Image 1 (cartoon, rainbow, N blue to C red):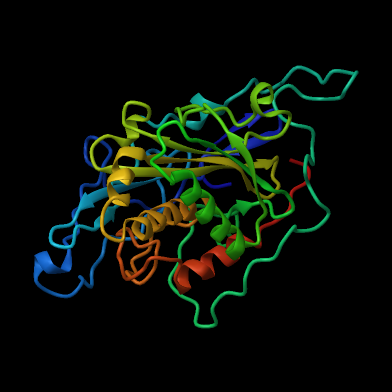
Image 2: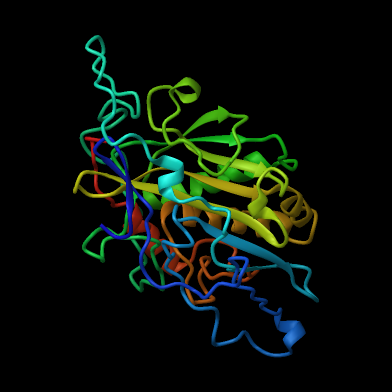
Length: 336
C-alpha cells in the first residue's frame, strides 16, 4: 500500500499518500496567481502549475483545495492550487480505532466500528461509465492501488450516498450541486443517492461511520455550503475543498468509502451574481466533484481539472471524461 494506514479492526483506512508534490510555504500553501489574458496582454501561458500528487505529510486524507482569485478585466474567477493545509489532521488522529475491536454482539453479529459487510452491494456494477472520447486527453489521479497504475475509485457495485448541508447555501445552490452530481453520475456510471439535508459540518476528523446519524452504512458523502468560520480551510482565497477516504480490507484492493466537499458559500454567491455566474459556479462544483471522485489537477488548460476556472471550459473536457471513465470502472469490494 502507498502511504501509511490506520486500522479499523482489519479495515485499513489509507491516507492516499505518496508521490510528488508542490513545495509548500510555511503556512502549507503554494502561493500562485494566474493572470487573466487581458491583464498579461498575451495568450495563456504554456507553463501552467505542475501536476500535484498529494504528499502524505501534507495531505493525509487525500484532500484537494482550490483557491479563488478575482481576475482583472473579465470579472471571472481563477482557481489555483495552494497545496494542502496544515490544519488537516493525520489519518491516525482522525480515524484510528483500537487495533483489536470489541467482539461482535452474538445477537446481531455486528461490529461497532463499521457496517455489516456488503451493505447496499449489488452482485455487479450498478451502471457503466460513458465510453471515453477516442482521442483521450490529459488526466491524472490522486491515489493508486498498490500496482501504482490503477486509480483508487468508489465501489461501482454500491450507490454513492450523499447529503447536503444547505444552511449557508446561496439561492439555487442546492439545485446547482444536484445538477453537477447528476453530470458526474452520467459520466462515471456510479449511482448517486441523495439522502436529504443534514446539519453536519466538514470538520477535521469526520467519522466515516456514524450509525446514530445515518444508519448502519458508511457515512454518506457530505457536501456543505460553508464559510471560513465554519471551515478554516476556506480562509483567504480558498473557494472549495474536496477529497475522499480510501480504505482496504487487509491487503485487498482499496476503494473510497466516503468523502466531503466544502463550498465557500459567500464567494460562490458573489460569483453567481456575476456575468455567466451560474456557468462559472457549476464548473467550480464540477471541478470539486472531480477531486471527490479521485481526479487530480492537470497541466492542460483545455481540461476542467486544470487549476484555473476558464469560461472556455465550462464542462468536463476530453481528458476529464477519460479519467472519470476509469474511475467509474473501479473494483467491487463487497467485503467492505
